[in-house]
Structure formats: C-alpha cells, structure tokens
Length: 307
Image (cartoon, rainbow, N blue to C red; front, side, top):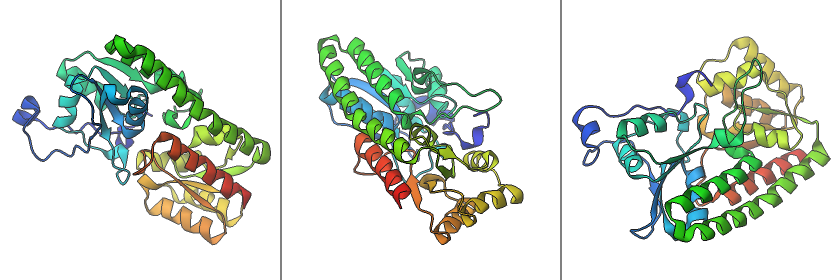
C-alpha cells in the first residue's frame, strides 16, 4: 500500500542512542525472545507470527527475536527502537512481511551494514497488486504462502547451520502437515457457504475469506480508509452500515487491533441486526501458536456462518 501512515513505523531513535545501539533506555521495543543455546542461529522476525514459524522449524537450534509481539498493539503504528536494530545487526536470518508492511526492517538493516539472509513473505507468496488496485500484504492469512514460507525458512536455517539442515527440513514438513486440516476446513466452508457475502473492517483476513469461497461486500473505500487511518466519508459509512441494517452480509470480520469510531459503529450495527462479529488480529494472541490461532480463526468463521 502506498500510504505510510498505516504501516509499521520506522520512528528510530537518533543521536548518540542510535549510534551506540546498546545501553539506551526509553525504547518502545517489545521484542520477544526464545531461549536457545549460545551457538543457536540468531533469527529476527518482524512480527511474532513469523517468529513462531522460525521457532517451530528451528527448535532449540535458533534464537528468535520477534520485534512486534504485543497483541494489544496496532502493528501499523509500532515505533522500532535501538534494541531492534542491535538484534538485526546480529541476525543471520531475518523474516519480514514485505509489501510495504514493515519497511523499517530493510532501513534498519541498511543502517546496520549487516547482510543476513532475508526472507520476504510477500515475495515468497508471488502475490501482486491487481490491475488498478493495491496489494493485500497480509499474506500470513494465506496457507499456501505460509507452507512455502516454512520451506524457505528451513532452507535459510540449513545454510546457517548445515549440521542441522535435515532437522529443519523435517520440522518444516511437520508444520506443513498441520496446515492441511486448516485448508480442508476452508474447503468445507466453501462447499457449504460459497458465494455468501461478508463484511470486513480491514483487508487483513481477505485471503482466508477468498479461500473459503466467500464474497467481500465491504465498500473498498471503507476498508482502505480504516487501514490507512483516514476518516471514512459519511456516504461510505452509510453504505457500509446499510450492509448490516439491510442484512446483506452473513458476518462482520473485524480487526481488533485497529478499532476506532467507524469500526465501532460497524460492530454495533452488526450486533443490532443479529449479524455475528468475528474478531481477527494481525499478531499472535497470547498463549497461542500459529496453528492454534488460525484454527480458532477458521472455526470462528465457520461457526458464524452456520448461525
């Protein structure tokens, strides 16, 4: 997406604190680390979604730092700090989303002068913006992309630690096998509810919605404005709310991490009309790994459509 206001912000600290990297206080860094041996491969992931994948595939052989790890925080407004850059400077493997979502990673790598193996999830997906439209960069909601990403992570870790390459490959295969039941659940939703309309507050879950054969009836101007942090025009808001008052959709899929007055109006309108509201997030909820998180997402959608 071209507008920077709703992307992971690169508000880096400057001056002496920026130069020295370590020993600075006041950073907004919320990085999460995984315990590992001193000889483990250092990995940095832009969000805990990709950090979880790295931990599953690398196990005790990796030391993972996830820059964004707070489920209560809007990832688009995150301010990267000096500890993030220090971790990136030491990393051998870096996993970023790409597509304009976390550009601060590339800028910080360039500033650090390091050259780790960088895995860009959007590039792995092969997805591009539709003609006349904008790229939906939320590729972690696309299971085929995540399966390919697991293989890429295993290959990168294998290059960094050749002695354990076979283990990484097997771990990736095990992870991909866990994705298959999720894809089957999506296929079942498509068979039972294909063509039914839903609304979204943001494009975050669209890959999952499309894989389930559902139709996004939300005015594009509404979801784009919410994602970019812009005001929704009165006309667009009326059109969106009419989806609920007119019961033209079967569910509202709402990004809980970017709520505001317009999304709250949409939620209230859906609830008043008896239309289920299905929450989603951009980062892992506390206490869940990727598979458990996505299982809950798919099951919640299926349950909402069955009402």
